[in-house]
Image 1: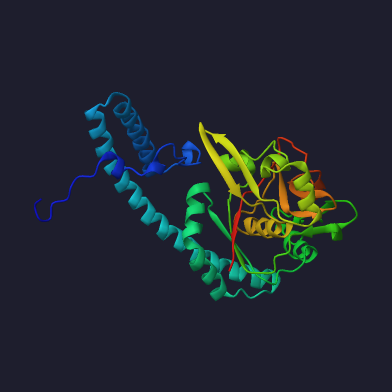
Image 2: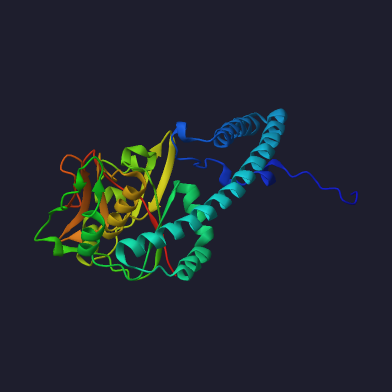
Length: 329
């Protein structure tokens, strides 16, 4: 063999096994970038050529798949480098913005070194989750978060709407007992949480796919297990399969607590002067009231947040959840 000569890899060596049948993008077509559309087009062409080669031993189809995959690999490599840069830029911007948010709204100093340590330690997994589920926002949670009553009074009920409307109305709690009867999964530690910035569940295919599902359908657990975890104050992890645009997608994620939801609600309002969930309700599967799971929604007419709880078997077309994924040390 000549020195410096590199043997051409076979099609099996070139194309990784996880390429076949791989779920790619969970985005609406109008939201796709030109590069993403090109990648999807190439994937389809490659899969068609591979099928023809495997079924009929067509050498031209094999060569076509080979050439197309080299194009595909080049574009995806560029997109990955670009994604790394964008993720890092967004993270640095998020730290600065949320340091100011917590200081001005709650008097909390964010320990930046701890946050960066979590980011560095979990970056590979964070990037993978962003690519898989299209998370586009980062929420930092400190280890000394105030109780829900304090968060609500300082973050929710101080939102001042435009056009002379003044502050929003007091949050309406419809629970067994009173506001004090809400309990969330205890987590007194710094966290980085990945979320979607879509205002309403219907605005994102993955979030829309969570509607019309009760807690058992969203977790893959039976009713007895769900009931047991609620009684023990344990998290209800998200684990179900859904079909979007003909693709089967396995969703493994987390929900949010009421406290985390209220922080997101205020952050979204600060940036957009709108409210999360104006057209829907959201399960908050890290918060409970008695034997029920907490859910919340924004009532635009009443200009206030509504918080209630319902049985795990409750399901409605307007009720879903905001997927999330948290990371800590």
